[in-house]
Length: 312
Image: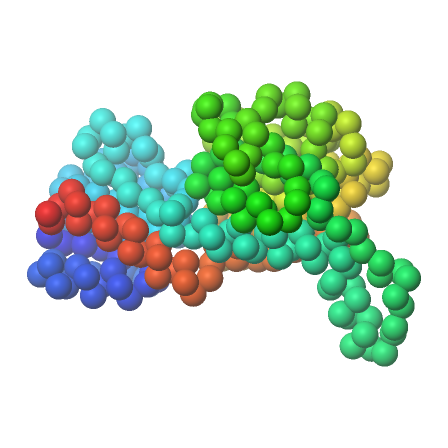
């Protein structure tokens, strides 16, 4: 089998494919036109987010049997076309769910305890204990929207913090257990102190969190987004913070990221200028699921899924 590696992924992919006597081509410097020209000769494709695999390009991939994406989101792949044309698509949210959950808990605790502010002040000799008095996580209600691998792992890791965890998922039911209580969206609006998004990027979730949405909460909330940046309208989030509707935010993803997630669209940077000046907003550069351990585990998950279908 001939396999194309489009993005720089864990070396385990190449090592394992070669062990199976498959041919591996590394295309890290290919542009889109080169991919269009060459894709017809490959039976397998490993990709993250550098290119969009729409019907236009997939129709040229006449030998393609599978696409592997080490990661969770599949919005850059035309899944309907793949299904109709019997192209298997493998993803690996199992591989980075722990990384995501640990990261956003870290961000949340840092925000609640003024950790980054206090650290920066002490570094310049400022010792202000009272201003940096924080809040405890214990006793708060954590609302989760989207209860897949990421949402459920987050709930599980919160178990020791003495919080109540509630979740809404439009496409799942009967998942209440010792870690979470399944509720309606109305209950999310009513009870939540901290809201965490774990939804895929779809037509339903683009722009989902706007000012009207945020105004529906009965209490001022802290918003966490480690899902997809386009789900949160940043200018509306800034307005919600100014209005007191939102009292803080932890943002690992931004709506102005380029589609590859590797940079920001600086032509739209003014969208976050107001948020950048707020000490109750924390940013990280789409790294919640980006640990060294997760990179290996995501590769292992995809390879195992490929193996079960095409090797065993």
